[in-house]
Length: 274
Figure 1 (cartoon, helix red, strand yellow):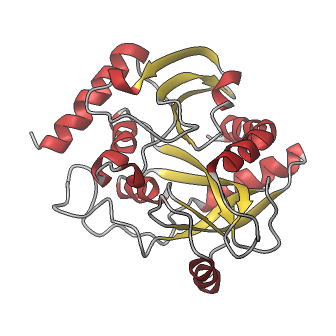
Figure 2: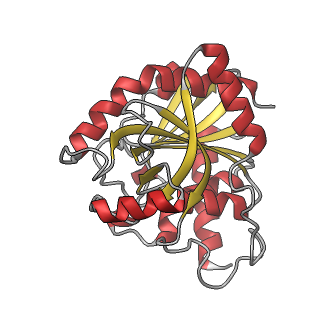
């Protein structure tokens, strides 16, 4: 068996042994956004250190746990903390959990993140439904020999983010009276924040927000035919948009201020997913 396929299989078997099967939706929780599953019923936790092949997350605000529970009437499998390329992980390790989700039979992924605002109409604390992304500067998670068992060599990215789920998210927000934005998310590798010149260039290309995650996971999910929804919490305005120096503590603080509305919105979206 191909080494990567065995790694996927071993991790999936471990999760099934601990949690069982029959998951409906997978959720990746970004920096400071880990409270969502506190609302879930029948909660069970599994440390990444107990899952074969899983690296450890070193980013502050990422607990490093796989969580399952019932939320919005659906059985959820959630990552409380993700792996980032900037932590030194190989890109194949960054996207391993998404491949494991698919192996477990999950076909819907909700990926969330904390992001810097580029669009000057945005404010810290806004939630942005991701309409599309820019990833010119990212290492491709599909680089190397294609795993035909997972997906085709040249996957189409015309609809990286499901139009159906975008509309469902927007309607859920309206019904909950939560203001959300829509926009394009740009992925840069980090860990340094972007320069004002980089932010200006991204803005010219059409980016509304920027961050250091999500895109590799989304590409991987689409490669395997999963339906994807992405939501960013705008935790700060990017370099050159704001004159304030950027730091990760402020990112975490802003994310926590938004947690209540964020959790309500995600739970409602999950409830409505067919």
